Length: 240
Image (cartoon, rainbow, N blue to C red; front, side, top):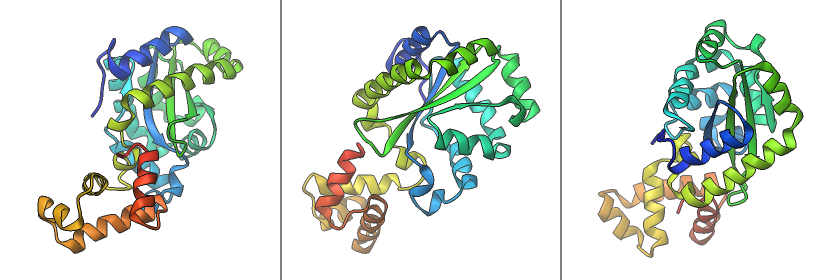
């Protein structure tokens, strides 16, 4: 679910970040740390970009900024180098020479002259990150932000902590990136609440083999050897 209502929820927190950093807008996603290490569906930059284009849990400080993000996402397919940088570096200033010309024109038409992505660790779930895309109105401001990376990162780290604590259980990057299915999370939630396999199977009209399949996928993805460890790891990722 996307959110674009300024003044409330995640959008309100992002607008506070805009005010503190003096940027035009901030776009945000709760993301996986090093996506290509999470399984076969994200095994290359191409796969990651494909999943980026499909994601629904994207947030922004305003409806206009969220719409802008959505409209420029199709250009990502021609920007592998930039995407690799923003996934591997804490701070990535998007070089205009690496952006497709239509994307540059599209940003400039909205008064955007520079884009910087800042990735910060999530203290609540260390295997997850917050990725903040800062949209600025002039190149000088972009240079200033790049020179003040410490202040920028500290501000965004505080925002990430607030978002994770208040909204983290409603945002599931592993589901949004199609690494695990919503059904698998639902099955695990039932088991974590004390239901046995038969109860879960009956409730969801699945065979026991189907329940076991989803549990085995979760064990593989989360690196768990048994149900107790699986529930523990899922809790750390705020899946439960």
